[in-house]
Length: 258
Image (cartoon, rainbow, N blue to C red):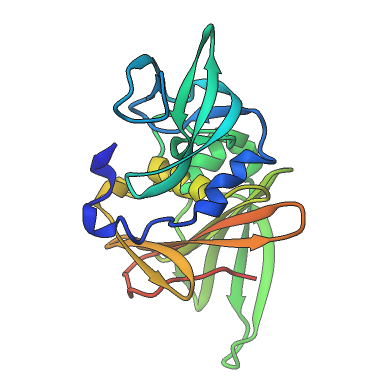
């Protein structure tokens, strides 16, 4: 797991102990292992404790209690959690456990993640946006979703926009001539949850990316785009959103959208 992040970025990534500790109070008891290498169940809350069993990727465990042992592993700050797995009981690092549905091993984008979780039929529409005149007025027409690339045609700007929504999450994206934007919103989650999805479905393998802070959002970028993670807290839950700008990197954090 240490290959994901270099040491220089450790102090930047998710020093959000309070958010990680939200597992303690109100997340579901059933959690899933969110690292493709699997995660060891151990006899004590420590990486040096004897191993009981390797729980595979997407393996389900039942949370018993959250310990007061907080650790930072691969740049993620989270508590150790006592869990049960089949007939075994032990401890696992909570930073690689999530209640979110997890993708298969073949996932390289947020749209692929959405389609794997909710199916191809959940994204079936796009919008043709034509420029009406030189005053930047536009006409929008909804059509059936297509995999065709966006093109300029007779002064018309054709934008393909994917949209989907479910009870717990929402996906949106658009593309214009190879550049575009995508966002994935979880109605209940933490920054660490969103980070794990980017680890699994980020472009070109997130272990090659650099990390920086801007405008109070966690941002991730390389030469194919820029991603940010932002949080919106309410009295009973926290909404977490991943925003991505695909195309030449400006080094700026895209930030949340309205």
